[in-house]
Amino acid sequence: MENTPLAPPHALAPAAARGRVLVVDDDPTVAEVVVGYLHRAGYAVERAGDGPAALERFAAARPDLVVLDLMLPAMDGFEVCRRMRAHGPVPVIMLTARGDEEDRILGLETGADDYVTKPFSPRELVLRVESVLRRAGAGAPAAEGARPLSGAGLRLDPVARSASRDGVGLALTLREFDLLAFLLRHPGRAFGREELMREVWGWDFGDLSTVTVHIRRLRGKVEQDPARPRLIRTVWGVGYRLDLPGDGAATEVAEDAGATEATEVAEDAAVTEATEVADATEAAAVTAATAVAEATGRTEGAGRA
Image 1 (cartoon, rainbow, N blue to C red):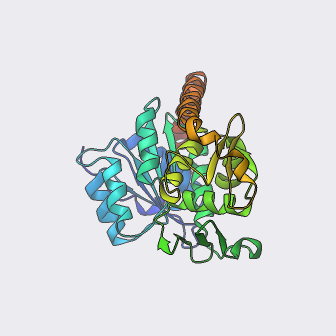
Image 2: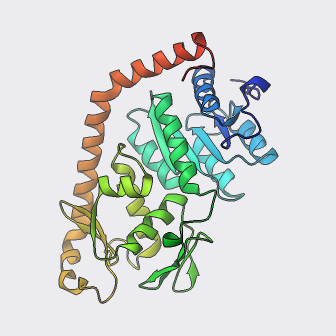
């Protein structure tokens, strides 16, 4: 499919827009609905219909966030995300087909900050955009969250958004950084996935496998042996806990010796199964919501969301 042209002038938000968003999707219907909702929410929006066009738009004017479909002609969303990230950090929300669990997980592991499954509610997508941009932090962190964090050789500077372990820099995504910072602020305390999703992602809903994937990626970057984690520990039946040397974690050293890997496999399977069940029960409702949203955007004008 040929490239979708830039959004027409009337689709751009005024100069005082909340942010600039690049929407990349080769389906003109989906792109039209997404652009319409984001515009009415106060964002300046540009469109691209394939990977090369998206990279050209990105190079010409760096957006504040990219909404990126995985299934694109010429170049898939994974490669587009990698090439964009090679030029510096930018928040990315990936759009994936419902049920493509492996694609959703790979999207997060590629470095996407969030994902939304198709079919989706445009209003939910707008909420996700707001959440990711809020976490990206246009302003300085609040005073209580601005102080450097350290422990077990880790050091995070929330103001500079930099992280290191034993003096070596860590390449953390936006969510990985926020997740590690949150755990470092609460060492020794166990948090459930729902709590982490609420506190780190700012969501009261969502796929819990998002948390699982980010924990796994974070372990791969901060643990000496990710297969036998000593810092970010699994608390069976609860969630995860950050243990720092001297905080009493010695009493549990034996639990990871043979159980951690089996625990992680079991919990991932459980989360995946729960996700698939939730997808199945909600698919009809979300499909209907998307259809209504499309009709609304075409017949009721730009004045209603």
